[in-house]
Length: 160
Length: 188
Image: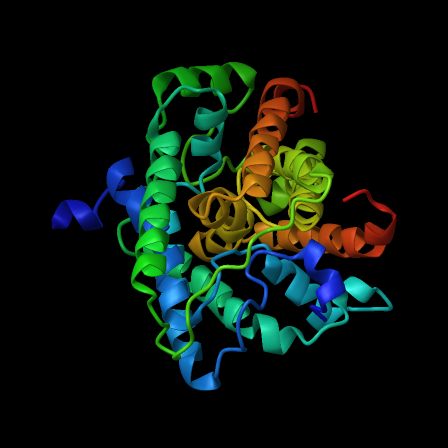
């Protein structure tokens, strides 16, 4: 329930808009297929690439993340400037994230970073890797769900 | 064109293509690109229990993203079966370092010594897969986003919380890389 009191826990990809009408779901499926394809072909889902990045032995991953951010930022700025509407007819808006004490971002970010290096994958790549031939990562996804669940359970007791 | 379908893509092709998913989802339906909220949606769908965090209408807010996520799995399958490289051409320095630490197989997207059903039964495989997976789930839920939601969507929208989270991602990643992984690979 994303009630106003809940806004400080705003998640990425949360409902900043009305729910997608079923007629648009194939579009999201298609975009997902494209994203999984790009993740695999760009090799950002590879444990080897992640190790190379954290050892600062190649510019590749930094180039990819950096140019992805620049491309996304320019696109968002352009969309805001021309006041573009979505295909579904809504005015495009991105809800700002609530800073709070910032602890959740520093602590949660660091814990995720540990997992990112250990598994060699972030959430999107975990799923793409299962499709791309590392089926044992289904166990990593199950474990990630357990981690998310434990967070939800502990949330009232954790500093945000 | 054949180069596009064979071998690895250069960073300046891969990066902008990844970045374009932010405007694509905004234009498709005013959706913010972010994968990790799917973990929350899946918890809400499978086992919400009495936890308030999971008691919301996941179909209303998350169905589009779960559909996107199932596409990601299919996309990985398609890429692996249509010309993705069989080995990752990492830098010789990284290869030498990892060999020294105890990684011997360099084929595939991830080392089989850590990521296979057989490896799951070893301590180092368990740490990589199960402990690593748990930290991915807990960390992204606590931080409210992952590489897609914070590092790409968030930074592209100049969000300070996302910048803090991304510093955390790299702090944690380097901690694991320099202090935990050498032990996991070489000793366990």
